[in-house]
Length: 120
Length: 78
Image (cartoon, rainbow over all chains, first blue to last red; front, side, top):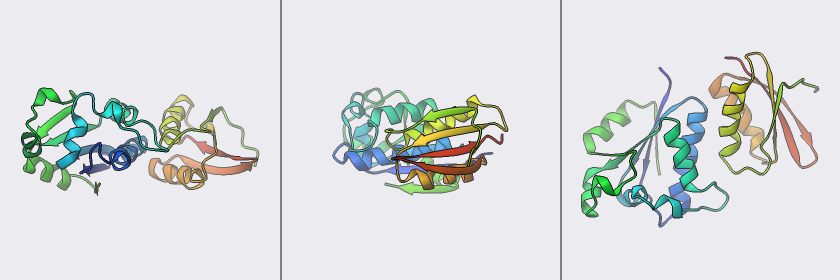
């Protein structure tokens, strides 16, 4: 079994740099053969809305959408915090197809099953 | 240093993390035991390629400094 990295994201499109860096780390980890999963909580939820990532650009990094596409194509998964989704009156169909709505026990399970965790 | 590379990949001008993402793909295009040459102009690359090799197990053979860029030599080990 390969190594596992879990990344928790808390920033959304209001902070393009902190919305992009987790996917920079994730794709770099994947390029090192590491299995990566990403969780979105709080404002990060908005990023997973259809049509949002396309508009997030941080200086000196590739466009967020390109990184997310690479991440998904390489087998990466995205988990969305269920209560955070409800707070924003959003539903599963509002999100990109690869994002899965979960709750705290799933996040705890993913964290405990990972070798390392990064929080942004 | 004079390593004989079987493939050269030009990562100059690419934004992080693209050089390492593309390198991970390129190394699969050579045979085990062959050498990949990567050209990069990012100062951080001097640390990045040895680090990537440490994580992946590929062998970092060394680097050469050219005018405004670096040449990195990586041997595919698996």
